[in-house]
Length: 277
Image 1 (tube, one colour):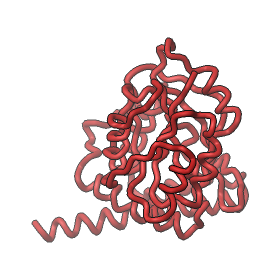
Image 2 (tube, rainbow, N blue to C red; image 1 turned 45 degrees about the vertical axis):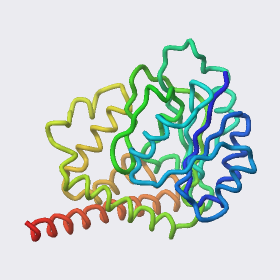
Image 3 (cartoon, helix red, strand yellow; image 1 turned 135 degrees about the horizontal axis):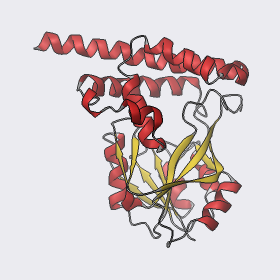
Image 4 (cartoon, rainbow, N blue to C red; image 1 turned 60 degrees about the vertical axis):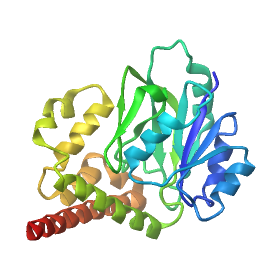
């Protein structure tokens, strides 16, 4: 079964070559670029990819535009980022298990996040499964940042790892990116996009649908006090991030700092809007 590949890029000349190497088995690779100023487009074109450029506005709008407008050759799409790599096991299973006659709308893939030293954050990683292999007409994204995938139809898991290197450009780049993310998260909170009426505690705790469960859990979490401390405790003692050694402990601190930035920017934005009103 042939599968199209979608890669979102913005100045990814460092990571893109290895990413493309991991999906060279596909004959339909789309690089969806946000007008990079480095050699990203040149690298993609030299590799024979189809390059489409669009100004980035927010994550869900950008991703939804790609699914609705890019001329995918095949009915199934594998979506990855430039700092991710498709393992050989995932490649094999994707090309043998995915069929046009299958009623499945999407497959969940287990992702492995790696720290700076190459350590797999097996315990510290918060969300190990992601919907990345799907029929594009059955998928849509919601939220300005860290989008939630909404699927129309049944979902199944597929074996094989998607390897992720979020620190490939260094801790400084990770911090810079998450400081920007925290601004978007704060805006969504203040703008009331997580209304109590839309939250289901039952779905957040008991539903079998991972995407629905995660969506409601995130909404519930953002209404809790002391979120940075709760997040650190959850990662350290519930998920046992300490079993990943120094890398896991450091990652737990970084994630709690990210949560603290959201809290600070949320308060700042609320004060600003009260003053303006």
